Length: 141
Image (cartoon, rainbow, N blue to C red; front, top):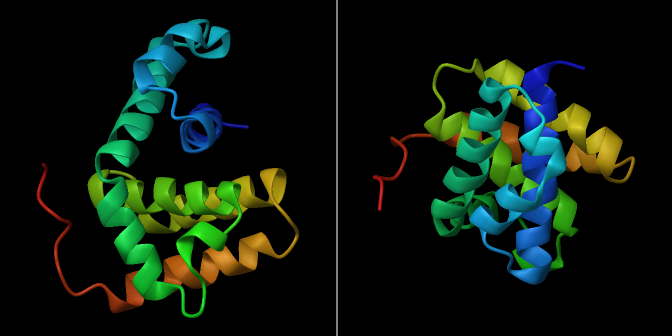
């Protein structure tokens, strides 16, 4: 597994914790032994993914909701919801990462952390967003 996948998985775990308990990012960064012992580049990427995803969460959720016909965001499994948020943040705000890489990483992470059908669901949402994308990412708050 590559370092960037490890960063994405660690970011997913932190986003999950935030979704369930509301723990603030700085607290999660401070407590994570895995993050503290990681190489500096991995630490930076993980922090950027978590902070950025949470900063743009409302916008990302709106995009997911528009794309997910007949699925309310609150009814989606927490893991799937956060994989989608994470991938969309990276697609919209980390332009140096090729789109196919972001999608492949999201699907591989879904296969590892979610249900067997989740990767199909996530792929459908991300593919639909990319095919329907007509505007630039929302401006920074």
